[in-house]
Image 1 (cartoon, rainbow, N blue to C red):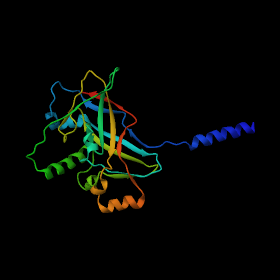
Image 2: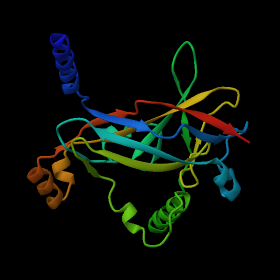
Image 3: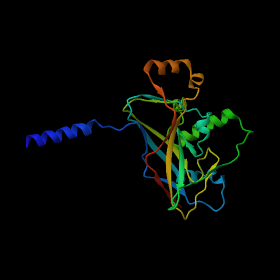
Image 4: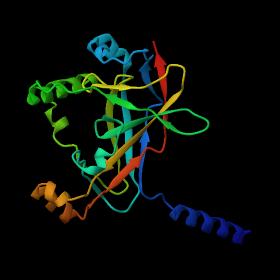
Length: 236
């Protein structure tokens, strides 16, 4: 009897030593809202505040580091890695949509309109920041640090939470985008996060490089897909 108990305890000890590895991305939301898509693709609907309110979803997601290493995430939006991500950008992530199809996986295309090159870039940036804070239900004053830097550090055994918003099927009021949904089909959404270590020593500031070196951080390189997908819920 004692021998059996000892064997069981030994097995539990061995199983307890086995742990997850790598980085894990997870969407917290159970679903994402979208207005019923119209037959004609248009961006004009985003000028309507009621449309913005009804179609808005604040998406919460978390990143967990199960590795023994601590990583520095370098979100280089001008690099090749990011240029290959063709989804809808929300904060520090990219969201992709998939049409439910029994035979094959079908990614839904995100269409972007043409930017207005006659506008002042600084005024665009400031207005964008104010709009983002409003849509995330934050005060528009005293929250400048929200936009200071997209890069971040995730330590071993640490979980970080993130949020972004989207107004489907129009992307959001800032992005001139439209997602090609069919109201008679079913869809799901997936989130990805990326970090680009390519030539990071030429792009990051000297204090940041010293911080990375001094603390033994590793600059992560690659794209992480969320372990789950959530459904798209159409509303009138």
